[in-house]
View (spheres, protein in one colour):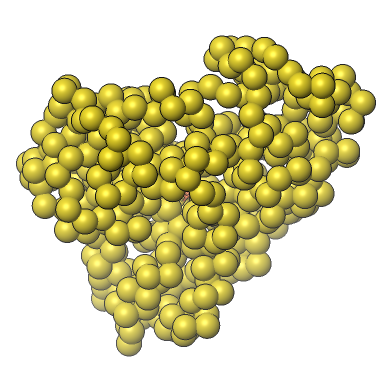
Length: 394
Ligand code: F3S
């Protein structure tokens, strides 16, 4: 792979060990994937923040890098394993909290923004069309490629961090126009009435498309919330990093829908929803996967007005969106009901299984997928049904 003089210098170690290590990761990746060179990135988003997933080895790795490494471009963080402020009220143990705060401190030293959200695009880290970026939260990768028109591969935590410390990423995959073409047409013949419907369709399509690029045909309208749910689901059941949709994807108007096509019907929609539902009485209800938008918080506040929750109910969102919700008065209504905000974290990366919960109701296909992998039973339902379930008299 061809390196510029500045990149050779970084690789030589004369700019410190963290930069050298990062360059080694990027060069190795570039060689595996046949990149001819590196490209500068304007934005980075790093996953691998929860102590639940990182463990002590992860802390050691980060602390070593933090000795002399510093972010060179704007870099935001994925959710951590707990709300960094209200962790006690969430039932997190002191031991877990101490280790989680150690992780956060290492990232702070590295110069990353402690934003702890999987929706950086709702909190100011919003790249533009055509910009090269290196993001590692898979749902945000799909959203960035497909809705914003930025260019990113599905980075791992270490490769995104390496991009942050050098300002570069290998030029291959979704950074190249030729790899952004659609590979499979999904003819949508079902009425998609809610974000949950988009989530279920994404789950169905992710399985079919694997790591291809689906082209959705026949969708009349899609809200930001629906697109973020679709992005998350596509990336959880498959290796999807991008989709095309007319009136949404900036590149879609110049794209021909592939001749290989699959029809998505109302029956498929019901089957997808069914496939995400086990049996059981939920002892934990959580919404906000991906993290809630302000509009979703407004809806939750409306649904909770005058009600009390009878089960543990988490509303997951970024601290930035929570601040806006505070100003509009939504947060007060939500908290008055007994529901808890889970800022900086979510139902998947927080250690809820070790807190004794067994059956989770949620409106996210992605959350269902990963919670099942963590040994939980799941119930996939609408946002409204989640609130009904949480406030049901027992
Ligand atoms: Fe975000 Fe957690 Fe879902 S990181 S996309 S809320 S699994």
